[in-house]
Image (cartoon, rainbow, N blue to C red; front, side, top):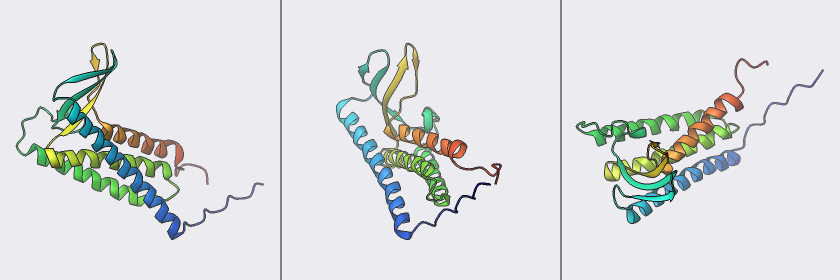
Length: 179
């Protein structure tokens, strides 16, 4: 008969503080990368202009997203659209913060994912509050097919969501697992 695995030791306060700092560092680096790349695009590519990076596959563009994810509500002529989209972003951030507080220190994949999501959401929220829109600049395409233009913040949110999904499906033990 195999011995039972030992219970994980509780994390010290110092170790918990290190994990929290790592979470916030990842978030801060992603916000900075997002804002720096947007400033570079704003300074070098005029609005609605395109610069080819990889012919037939990748361009840098300068577009404004006044809607939400994937350009939803972008062409909608709603009164107070900037207020609505900013409010939605703040609500999402509060949900992320609440979820992050529920995770244990051992759920590092989910924590990393949430740091990416938070960094991306904050980067886009800064744009919405400052300008009333989000600057998007990466245009991936193949022949006549184009993905929605996106930015570093959007990529961070997507990568973060994938990491949280991986944690939920592949990493975290489930209640149906044998005890």
